[in-house]
Amino acid sequence: MASFNPPVKQDNPDPRVACALLLDTSYSMEGPRITRLNSGYKAFCESLAEDPLARKRTEVTVVTFGGSVDVVVPFKEGRDLTPVTFSAGGATPMGEALNVGLDQLIARKTEYKAAGLEYFRPWLFVITDGVPTDMDCFACAVKRIREAEAAKTVTVFAVGAGDADLATLSKLSAVREPLALDGLKFDELFLWLSSSMSVVSQSSAFGSSDKGVVANEATEQVPLPSPAGWATW
Image (cartoon, rainbow, N blue to C red):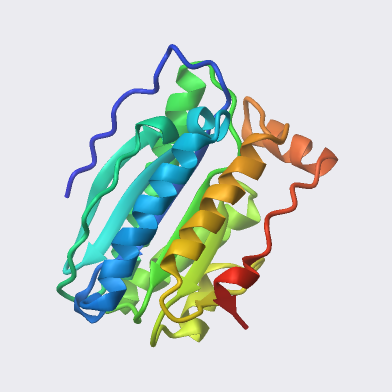
């Protein structure tokens, strides 16, 4: 599993919003789902690159979990993202992926501080069509994520596709219920994510410390776009 991330670009003084995308690439994603996941991620890269502010302020890492857990895209600014072709296979080690994703966000925030950069609250965004096959690890990861969310150091989203167990996904956040993907609307989902990154990056809800971020969030509500175009309830 790759864990290397390139250093923060020093020629970009803008505040950063780190987003860890955790993508299920297990065997159950084979066929139309993995095809549409690839299409959606491509649309995300292209859309983010077109936004003059979000392309500099958003940094994305992609962690896949299908058999193994892999950091397939180390942190990159939105303007440097390029499409990736994901393939499906293996079990669903979601717990391990959650731990890796959270570790990636914590490490990146440390790098922002070392570089003297301000930052927004990081995002942990999970997309899966199944249930964890490493339940003990999943339980430990849930505890870590809930604690981080309670401390307001991470924003957590979960999306269930196909036969995903929403009850299990609901354990990830005490703030947001998981959403169900409407059919194969991965393109719409990823375009919503790009639009959300744009909204966040245009706000002033950032700071040089976790306390500063929370204080600035309290003075500015950042309403995200409606997920009605891709989600069902």
